[in-house]
Length: 137
Ligand code: HEC
Image (tube, rainbow, N blue to C red):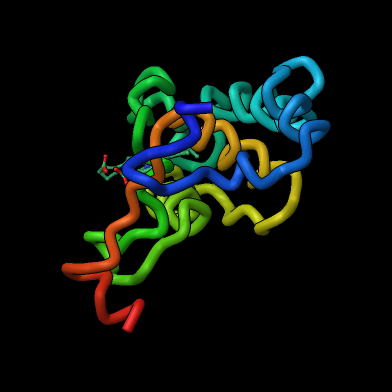
């Protein structure tokens, strides 16, 4: 399965059982797609006092292609090491004037899975040097 290897590195997919691999390969069987579908609705849902949705600023979700694969990364605005969930909450509180979403709850799982889905098939592209180095040291 060549598409799951890059420069000698192997995707975790290759270590899953054949049953789990089959489920992940079939979008109708894969339970993650429930989150993807709900996240798609959240992308265009106006929330907060600024009267905006994610799409108001970012346009089509395809603008997120490759973005999820770069997390965690240092946020330019705050200098903190951000997981994707931190960045989503930052956009919600600072830019939408909406409430923070609790992690591991349906809304955050939906929107974060939907953003990650835009990077489907791309290799993880996390930087551990530059501004991120001190966090990893
Ligand atoms: C009022 C405008 C606005 C809204 C609404 C908004 N964002 Fe953002 N978002 C920005 C800006 C500005 C940035 C920083 C510049 C950039 O990276 O595009 C950003 C950055 C991001 C990033 C990081 C991009 C990167 O390259 O690392 C993600 C992910 C993101 N937003 C997701 C969302 C999601 C999901 C929502 C809806 C819950 C949302 N944003 C709502 C303006 C907005």
